[in-house]
Image (cartoon, rainbow, N blue to C red; front, side):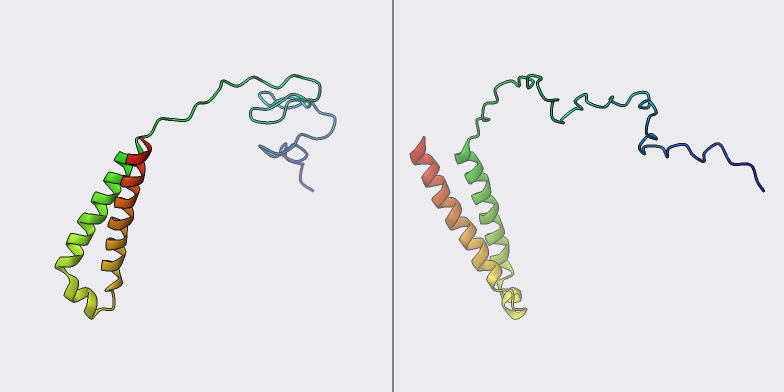
Length: 113
């Protein structure tokens, strides 16, 4: 018979400690809150700083998107013959819809300013 190795009976790294043994060093003791976990009953919840929404220029975002769709539309117009021959004519329609929706988005955000 062989001698039991020191690893037998000891917890696997990262696994739970045997019942009744102290928590491994560096791990939170039972009943203490862990980062991101709930606080124990009866203790006050930690205060968080008030978050404010970031200011985003929606007109500029719509403009960049519209320009990207317009560039795609121009490239697709150059290869329109090949697109139709391979059954991908809908790509032109998609790019045109992107430009149209972008223009509508720009008009909407311009009115909201």
